[in-house]
Length: 420
Image (tube, rainbow, N blue to C red; front, top):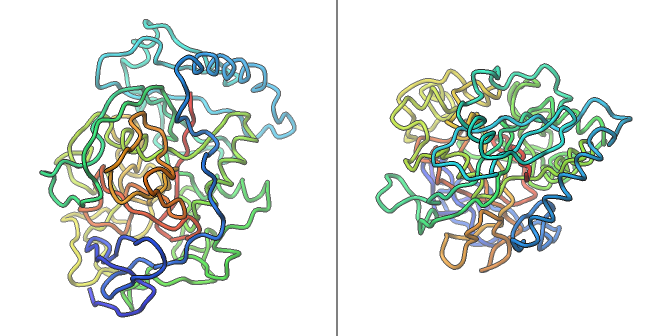
């Protein structure tokens, strides 16, 4: 990688992107980094977000769950009757990795109403993975709500141990997190086709279409990221179909999408928290990557031998080829043990959490979003999972980075979550 002295980039260098981690503020830029150093978002982020579950007393939760179930039962068959193309999503179930917890399962009836299962039903549901009954991420109707996977409650170790190869200091200290309640996560990243329906219904214009900056795209001739005013989700700088993950969308854009989806379905959708994302990505594993020693190119769209045409000479590539230089249609690679696709690679995924430099201080222990506490920077949000532009070092379950909430890049998208 050739170092740059252009003041719009910041350090320190991250070799897997020939990129940097963004630093606080819009100053302190230095040579050799590749991620844009952007001003903070003009919009002040709220202290609480729709769908955030932190701070709910246990005594209150039972009443809240009852009313959620009742509300879903009453509204799902009638909400938005004038817009029948979208309805609440049927929920698949994920494979367990520890003994089951009574009443931890969920199911939906034909109308999408949620009900609690007894222990016998939970055992039956979690006894078999549903992936063989589902044809990957192929969508016969992009107007449908995203297919979801129910994720069971459990404990896990968040972050990477000091012994993990290629780790960064912001991945520690490793700490235990309890996911106290089941939640659902979209089986696949939100697609161009799904995002297109949102735009059609609302007339919304994304950050890249309105800020005069456009979407940041990788310029292989200059070996750096550059904003291009003409590039946005409809034209990200490479060819896409409705089956590809939408990119060039900011955190703010993703918030507008989940608000629309919630209104159209009568069910509260949101982005996953950083803890929920890592728990779901690991799918019961505590190793660096959920696919273990298997070939990266079977499970993740990252930098492989196919990327030599866009890579600098000193980039580290996976010793395999996934035959995709940019984004791949969602579900093109093998899923993890929870039946989730593209949790590593393809595109970075926005989360709810504000950026913290590491897990020092008092990160939430209940899987909720870590917002402004302990000097959290809510003008920048955590993104997870790596992308088509990442080498193996960044395609790890604990790897994390941050983007400004109003920035759009052609390797960043999102998936959605639901509280259950």
